[in-house]
Length: 466
Image 1 (cartoon, one colour):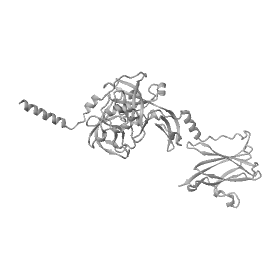
Image 2 (tube, helix red, strand yellow):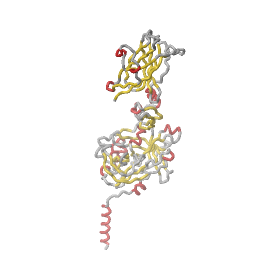
Image 3 (tube, rainbow, N blue to C red):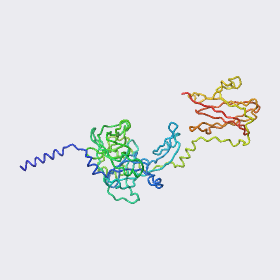
């Protein structure tokens, strides 16, 4: 009888050992609650001005070693390395507020119109102790390395508490699985901090972790042709970025990265890609290999660099660049006499034509040949327009005309465009000159005599035929 009992027990244990692994979300939530962290990006300079003012972004992450190494996405902490810029950008002639990772390309873009703030953030790690929204600790971290290829990964390290004291806490790392062995249809669990609350730093800190469950829907090589993403129908939202994705063995096999705009399908970076991101730190790398991190099968685009802060232009330097791009406001030339009156030129007229005097028998074009708008051939990159000044029956009474050309800006004010000078016969009652236009717009021609007397002005509109 005892022998039969033992044989039955062996049979039951054999069946149990062959049972298919099952995703256990209760186990994941209970065992790894302290492993999953909120990654906050804070500008310490702004934070000194007013608590909460320095909070600029957030994501998720997870401990992979007990001494405080963390995996997350590159895009979560990129402003810590490359800096950030808060600015206005012109879209369809309207200013649009934007916040982005700093780049010189943004600053040098002609549609960049105003800068509000520029700087570097630091990563601050929030670790909850339990289900109480007020029971958490904050730690300062550093970016050890970030991906530079198409793999969106970063390695962080806790360095101190918020008062810069050393940290002796033993953190709870997650178990690491093999992302190359995840099968289509396998159950997955996304764990992190989707941004449910966005109304300020105080409320954001109370935002608790969230689990979402789905399957590994398939692979994607469109957004990342070299390494690829795992697709999942598990919910991924802003704030989830950098959080872990568990498989049916209850091990982390991926990092939640993005969500498709059209399909809503989530994109998950395979955790094997972190093999190269972590390789910069030999201590962490060795420990991670012991914990199960392996080389990815596909890896031609996975490169990494140290998380050292990169230099960026200062607010003063950017403002100088923006100011230099602005056309100057028209000002009355300094040579113009304050006592100058326009009585002498009160009958003067300025008009424009595409006909030269030579083409018009050396006469001024009549009214039917005077125009306010001109269409230029874009293939020739511009064209010639004839500008006429008529003061007949009075003579011009000067041997030089100074012409100040302004261009109408997008905010409906005229800005300085170009200054030209033409020699004329002071005994003549009229004069003319040609001007070559190489860009579209509305232009205003102000004319003065050499002696500083205002003569008149005229407006012409130029556009290119497509």
